[in-house]
Picture 1 (spheres, rainbow, N blue to C red):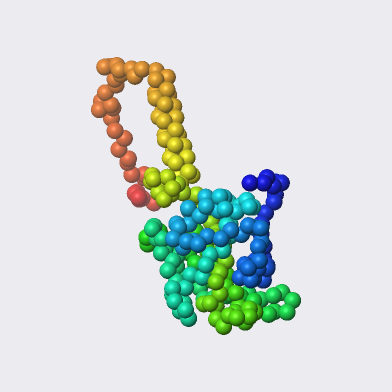
Picture 2 (cartoon, rainbow, N blue to C red):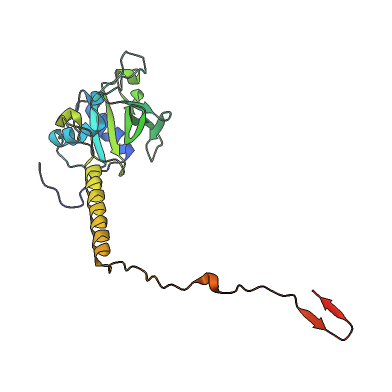
Length: 238
């Protein structure tokens, strides 16, 4: 892959994604592999996709965003049913469609949906934005279900590590961050134990107390007495 200067980022606006990249893909124009096409996009777990992106894309990722074209995912014509199930979980829609309009004319050019990946019942930090073209801008298409491609933007929250997926490695799904944290905790515990042991060894040995301790029982205890004040008028005690 061609090396880019430090600081290079591919961060198009949503208008550019739909009006330029997705429009060009639908019309059959070649964008030079800037956004790769992946036929079975929805069959892969999200942590598998960054490795695939590195193999088929001509531009690097910032490690938090990846862009893919995928064929229309609808199971049937004029149906919004989409199979978004993977081997480890599924994508769930989090909101209604958001309209994408041009900045100058405010013309509707497409829509966006936001989805979150669930590993079983656990919500993960993997998010996806689905971009769909407005069919009224394209001749020969009467509905969005007939448009052959959509654009998917995969996003990873900084707290979500890049897992070693069983799909590729054949091992357990453990993040590099988790392994490093476990090693750090083990090292820290070992250091604390060694420091405590060294401190105990440096202390002087305990000495046995002498047998000639004072007998505290031989001392008289103090018994408070009432105070008597003589004012010449008699004895008054408190």
